[in-house]
Length: 126
Length: 108
Image 1 (cartoon, rainbow over the protein chains, first blue to last red):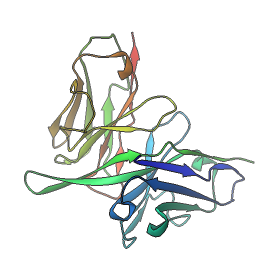
Image 2: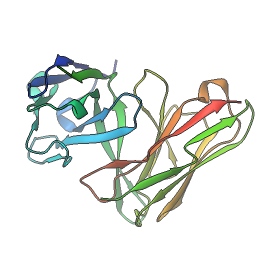
Image 3: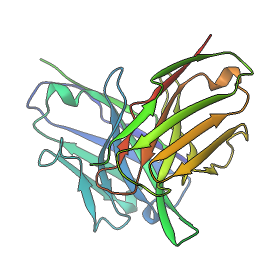
């Protein structure tokens, strides 16, 4: 079965650290770019970070830059998000999402997230 | 950053109704627009990519249109399982990828 399964969430104090994992199965993980997206309780979706298939290109949202680190281990079919200096506003469900691209007329390359995990909840509170 | 604004923020409709949700970008994003459906307690699911392409397995009652700054998601005949929150997303000028604030579709 093609799926993504996140783990590693939990309760952490402000200023603390946590590492999230996303295990991929059913597809060739090393061929895909991956992302982390989060959703605060009762709020909308917020993109967090991106990593290319070979980890040569990485991006972060300004809200997490300098505190979060995305990485991957293609041999283990796994994606990670290392989160440091956590704040109350980082409280959210964190989803990993597989990215795909399509070329449409005009040679336009459109990116989209076609597969999502079920998410893992991170709560930052004292 | 490109801002995405959806309207309405919430909507009440009945089974069988035709429903349209609008998404407006703060600048042209050509056709770099995707739509997702999210049910309570579940992960988002891709419905439409590249503004008008239907994701495999998604019912044909869902359709998308638009380009540039204005886009629409249409559900031709609402089914009970369609009551959910819908998000648009742009992937034209990244980072960051940005999402609309969501449209909550409720049963009337």
